[in-house]
Length: 71
Image (cartoon, rainbow, N blue to C red; front, side, top):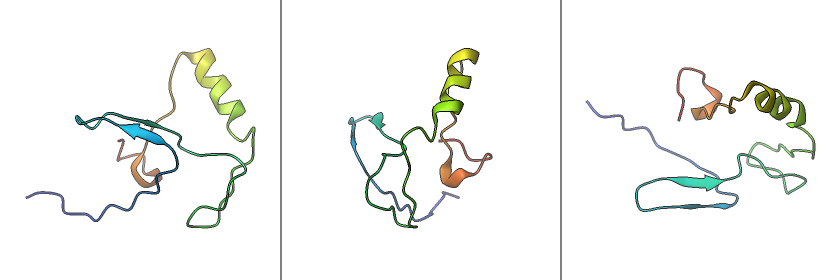
C-alpha cells in the first residue's frame, strides 16, 4: 500500500534538483504571516543554532513537526 497523503507546502525561497535534493529556508524573518498567521522574528533560532554548532549536530527536519516523521 502506498502513502496517498495530500501534501501542502509553502515555498518561501529555495531550489530543487531533478533528483529531489533541495535547499531553502525553513523560516524567513519579518515577512508576511504564514498560512497560520506566524511571523518569525530575527534571532528566534539563535540559541538553538548555537547549541547545534557546539554539539556538531544539525536541526531535525520534520514533517508537520512530528518527531516520528523526519523528512
